[in-house]
Image (cartoon, rainbow, N blue to C red; front, side):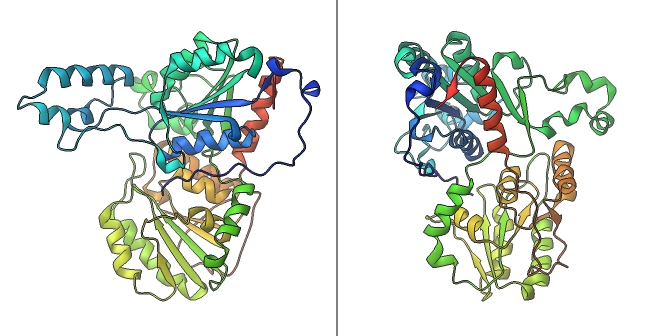
Length: 422
């Protein structure tokens, strides 16, 4: 589903005088977020910034790769090298018959990040970020830098290297090597699946040295259950108000179905769509209403089957992908969820509500995805969706609260440097 830029929760109206917060140069009051073009990367950065109360003073940057033509085969390269090669190829083959191979059929463009609700998002500029952090340190205090995604690693590590006295750098998602380049690394527990007994059994001994991570998490690593996100309690209260007129009158219980798409660690096709249809048909009698949403990764053949089956059903509404996005409203007003097993982000959001979450397709998952689902089941926050459920029978659990727990650890580590988060 399309990401949504959430408003910062309203404050109490009472600010702590600077004299009690340690002085301007010791208080972190601003944040820089660096994300890839992935909606999940933006959401994770913004979720942590919100949990730290810094969303009102946030500058968001993104890292983009050239797209089209031969560029689709160059994503294995570091992003800086990829951009350099793209520029060279464009200059060499401009106005030649090979231009189409280099650029592709679609015009070259750098995608913007308007979908997160900002008027403009800057392409990351390491020199600018470092200069600002240094030049304004005495007046504005330290800068919190939060980055997420493989392509952001070189930028965030460079910022810390060049301005270590002025910044606190957090890298979300495991960088695979040299974790000491960052002040903190935030990553799901299942990223360390390769070091578990089950993980070791799945990897032939010959290849174990190539599987990362190689070492257990160190002191600068914060482990989460799932993905960070922006759907905190304040955001859901606002969403409940915003979507009241549309969702409150619906017959209860309201079942929300979130459908993702296959990934390398969770492969499926129309077989899962047919399984979902059968199971939904079996539980419709216990539902008052059903609302279905697809993500950007949902294959058309999967969505077409779902549309064909349920488009005319009086209890079922299928979101057409047009704005406004009802995702937060669904999280706020749902009585229960069904989520496909491929999406850690959608599952993490649903499990933060404390409401029943049913998962379909876990049998298609492997490697660390299977470890993630096992962890959720052991915590009692999800159950398999079999089609035998009575949706009117509710159950609950302590909601997942990864962003708040990470924010608590961030404050502790920052305090060790003599700083506080304002």
